[in-house]
Length: 120
Image (cartoon, rainbow, N blue to C red; front, side, top):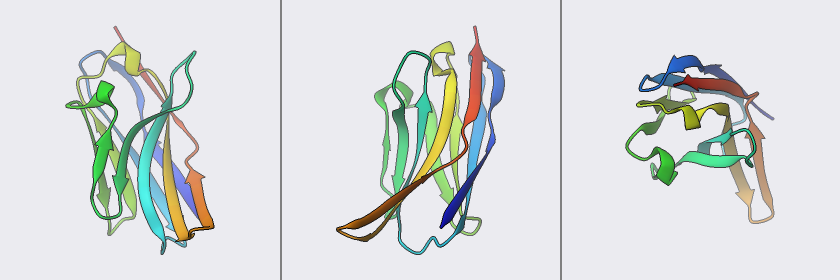
């Protein structure tokens, strides 16, 4: 079992910055990738950023140049640094970690969600 606990987020004015953090505990041996998703009102949950265990990153076009995903291996945390925030970034953000044990045994876990509100 894996537990993901999120921290950070809150209310910020447009143009401001926020940092989200996700701390993982449990059996992390077969971690494959870590990511952040968000749910914006009226839209489906979407991928914001992903970081694979080999260090590759991918960001949604809407956040490129503004958001950065990073991992602290010693602390087992994955962070999302958000800069130049826009009102359209408002939503609930979830961290996600995927584990691969075999082709038929893949699992994913979610954090509890964190509200990010950007005022105009």
